[in-house]
Length: 147
Image 1 (cartoon, rainbow, N blue to C red):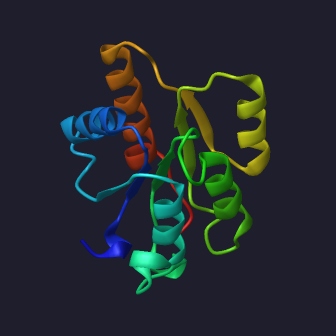
Image 2: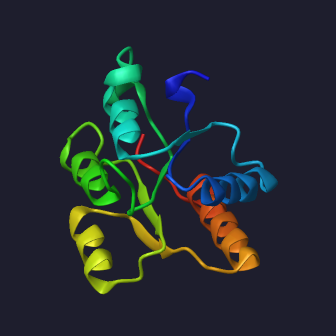
Image 3: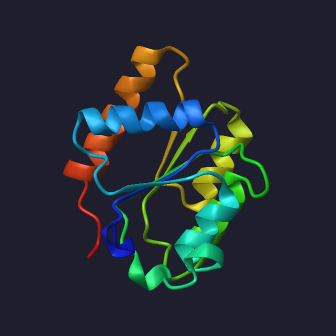
């Protein structure tokens, strides 16, 4: 898949949560142009064309959605969000925080940094599946991002 064809960037270190997100999106035919990145370092490399993704850069991307976990090793989601929203080439990328943290300081910080939405991962499978399906449908079908 060409990098400019990537519509959803999923940044999630937990393989079980990633599988659930991908499954929910696939059920609604929304995962065809999805890339799963396993931590913040890999996410920043992909988005900014570094490391294994040196042949591309932010000008080669136009994702409709970045789903970002907060609690990750190496570089956490707050740092990824900070870098994405502070760069003029990427600040318009929609970033939805999808995390297990319901802590008010995390929520406030993410919105201060420019997160477009903050969703706490439901614990129960059916609720998790519905939340991901709903957010996928909204961001992929109903939201109108800038061109």
